[in-house]
Image (cartoon, rainbow, N blue to C red; front, side, top):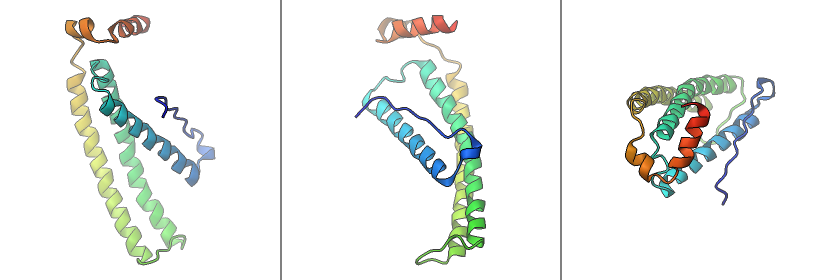
Length: 153
């Protein structure tokens, strides 16, 4: 298994389709899976407070966008059901899509709440910095210092 994952998403709204979105979200799920493995299998991978803060910041951006998308999926499937595009084998399509919409609305609210919780964590982490012990003991300290200098930090 490769340690490198390349994520390429559909950026042009004119080329978006259901399949393109499915493919994009599969790649996003794989990225999250890879990050889970990276942090599970390598304790200390986020020992650099700047890395941890940045990851939390990116998760904020993700959840801020997720709640909106979740809120849009329910009405989309309702419109598709009303147009006769959705059928169900053992369920009433109208009831199934109504219930799914309600559950997606709940998930949207949960994602918005998660975003707020992550913001609280980020505000705390953003006040932290690397210690002298980090610089003395962290195996990547020299490379991080070089990166910081190149970035003008």
